[in-house]
Every structure is written in structure tokens, then in C-alpha cells.
Length: 371
Image (tube, rainbow, N blue to C red; front, top):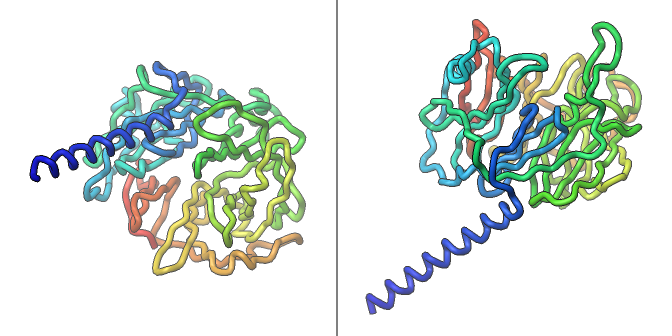
């Protein structure tokens, strides 16, 4: 009987490994093995089974990397790494003022922090992917031989300086402004070369053919007009009623909802502006979380701190279609003690990881309890 029970247990274990391997193979199906090429590294997002999506705005492409970082964290420790920019600079053989940390993403399986970094500034900057494990020490993620796949975006904006004087900019750098994964699709916000330049894309993963994006229009209450060229700065996915939506934040700071069901190639849609959160402000990063039975948005901003935004009655929110002097719509509170936050991501059910500016120009990576 014991031998029979042992055989059953071993068979179940083997079957579990088989199923796990089959699931992992599904997500890496069609991937190449080798060294992916990057012109830049910007927004990051994790998908299933340790797959990390890396946005390359300069190349107008998304690369999916099978990190292999799939060992579940056991009692993951809270992080606090002071002067993370100085540690990364030393790792890359440069000075702290010669690196930029462009984005932060937490692996939901291992709880390791991944950072998209630029070594150097300007046209000659070299991208690097950095991982920070539980001990707080950063390491370069070696990409010489990894499984990866790439999706090139059709109709990206021109890679050239436009405008005059101090208003010159390169629209290609905003080809991808944020990304997020949900239920087998990668959502991408940014600009295209279409007449309605502001674009949302929904790309099935694993990557195959990439169709055109959805052109989006919003009413910007602070500016008092409809806009089709302003890029989404950050977004998160959110269920309103029984339907999945993207909640997107723009500069100066409208919050707009888009039904995911309407994101179809070649379509032109109009979002519903449900809040104006204050002008002269640029949203930086946003997550959604639950606490005490209620759901909130948490949004970092460059001039208005970190906002905790209520989602109560969001399904009944009025559409803003007329000029707004400063604020209107969903209520929020500013988390006064969370100063200098540039980026944030969920760490676990009760904590968030933030990248925040400290005195002297250093950047700290630390976990904080969700407010």
C-alpha cells in the first residue's frame, strides 16, 4: 500500500511538473534564443511566468524576455536600498549623474525589482536592465543568451526633432509612454504618425502580427478643448461594473476611462473624462489596490505629490465636457509623507515599492505600506 501511495504521489508530482512546463512553453512559444537589440529601455511590465516586457521607444518596439525568474518568494522581505542610483552607477562604471532610471517593475512571482536604466545622457546613452534582489544589491541582467520575442509597432512617429527653439522635441521618444499586461494582451500607450496621434494598442501575446492602433480623443477640462495629440502618460487596468477598462492619466491632469472592448485596430474612440486632478502637473506612475474593502488608485506626480484616489461610484461618474478651472470629479487625498516619489509598483498585497528622490540627489528604492 505504501509503495502504491508513493507511486501515486510521484506520478502526481511528475504530472504537475509536466503541466507547469507546458504552461511555460505556451508563453515562450516562437521565441528566439540569443541577444535582443535595444536602442533604449523605457516602460516595463511583467506578464505571465516571469516574462518581462521592455519598451524601446527609439526603435518603436516591445521586446518580451523570458527572465527565468520564476521561483516564488518565500516571506519576501521589505526592501530599502538607499542611494540605489549610486550603486547602479558603480556597477556600470560611471557617475550617478550619468544614469537615468526610466522605469520600475516588480516581478510578482519573485518580488525582485527590475529597473530600466540609461547609462549616459542624450543620443549616446546605452540601455541596461538592472535587477535588485531581496538583499538589496543590484545586478546587471545579462541578455547575451535569453529567450525573447519582439513586436515592432506600425506607424510610429518620426524620429526627428520638430518644433522651434525651446519647444523642440523628438516625438519618437513618446512612441511608447506606458505598457501593461492583462489576460493575454499587452496594452501600449503612446504616439503614432496618424492624424489622431494619441494611440492605444492591444497586442496579443505571444506576439504574432501587430495590427494598427486605436486613435483616442479626450476632452481636457483644464485646457477647455478636445485633444487628439496629447499622449497618455500612465495608465492601469480597472474593472468598472463587469467590463474591463483602462484608466489613463494625461498631463495637467485629466483621468480618462476607455473600455478595453473598444480598442480595435484602426478605430477612433473618445474616452470619458471622469476627473480633473489639477493643472501644471505631470502624472508619473499609477497602480490600483484594495484596502479595507475599498479600491483605490495610487498615482505619483511630478508637482502634486502622490494621490490616493477613491473609485467609489466610479461607474456613476459624470463625463467632464466643459472647461474646469482646476479640479473636478473623483475625490483624492495627497499622501504628504510620500515626498519625491518618481515611480511605484505593487510589491505584495499590503506594500508598494517606490523610487524616491532624497536629499543630495540620491534615489532610494524602498517598500512602503499601502496607505
